[in-house]
Length: 171
Image (tube, rainbow, N blue to C red):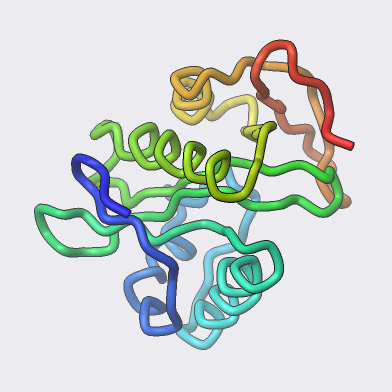
């Protein structure tokens, strides 16, 4: 799939080296609650257990975002089914030199449309740490608004859940 500035495609294990900064740079991980990865094997395992698993189990997942101008993998964006909440989350993460370029909004908007058209996904939520103002701003541009606070998995930290106004929890 192609947007104005990005090519969006499924991840492969061959993306591990390019994906590594997205799971190892402290400033990229600042609001994720994740620990930085320290080996390429660990990065491959993340690809296997997250997006590659999601594609096979749910038919969708986070997609690799390739900057068309440079041809490099600069981030990920897309839908993810959250088992514990029984909701579909829109998420995105980009390299620091791509922040402020509108890539998160551009890619997420396109992938939400695909999710609705190809997978019948009517309700999409966004989860964000309360301090992550930039990510909350993107969710607002996508038409989502603060709905409530939630805990995901066994996390001690509460996250802000954003959803389209007037949409209730999925069943």
